[in-house]
Length: 190
Image (cartoon, rainbow, N blue to C red; front, side):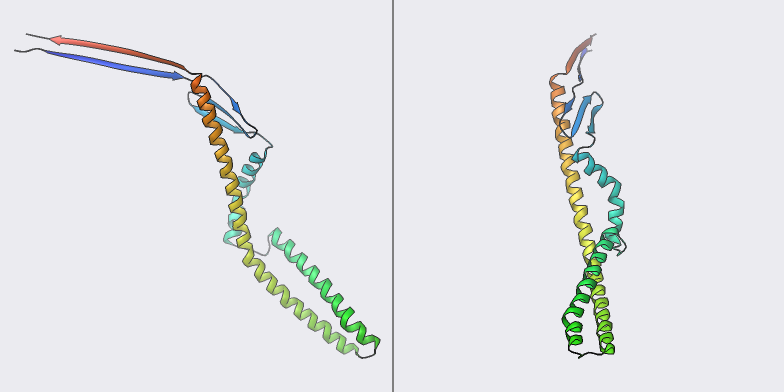
């Protein structure tokens, strides 16, 4: 009968990363054997954008899906428009129509009242139109804000990824690398 032989060899290697911290103005990355830990530098623009986006995205998405005249921005715009409209149209009516006619005794109080009532109706119509346009634009404005914040956040992600890669690369160059080889053989014969 014949004999046979077996041989077995294996190779193992391990890398132990030395702690290397890479810091840029926005982030700090430190690799170790478990991965890379990255933290945002507090009070930087990147940290503020990241925190603002995370803290407000739910509200912004809700405003996008359910536009409302009751948001702080829409209320401020509507109040400013209404105040300007009221002030300017009343001045215009009084200075350009009622005062000149009154100086010539060409207007009665009932006619002036009718002019003011017409003005109030026109103002209400203008405010209603403005409000409808404001709601329409509100969704677009909210979408634009979400888009801007997400772009800034993803730019920050690119900064974080680049810093992690740089830190890992630096740490790799400083790593302790060990390898071991082992082999065994056996034979049997008859």
